[in-house]
Length: 134
Image (cartoon, rainbow, N blue to C red; front, side):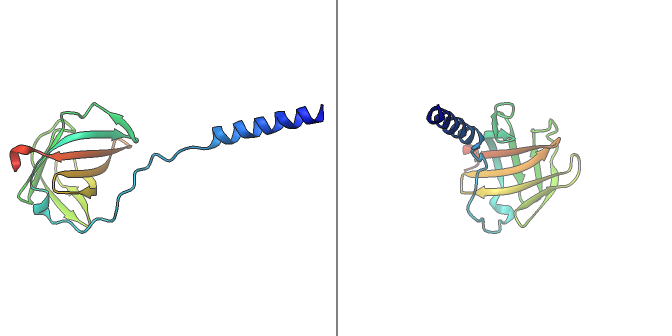
């Protein structure tokens, strides 16, 4: 009987360890050089959007338009009015209308990854440069 009890205890401990192990869904990015505003110019279309690191399709038709380092227009909050923005330390601060703060996580010639908080939810956007802009 003690051997059988030991096997049951080992089984329960194993199950407990497996259940309690949680994978970390956080995505990490390599360090990013300080961006210049002209590197953002043009239209960027939503490729993938994540709400609390869960893929969401609600923003599939979203876009961001950056104009000559001066204004940004986006349809993610329903207001496509261009507002001035400031880019510093890879933080993009939108002034006017619905003020917003976006963190630039990654940038290549054709892909831009932004993070922001909307209504206390964390969002991550993977945007691709519109082919019309090239």
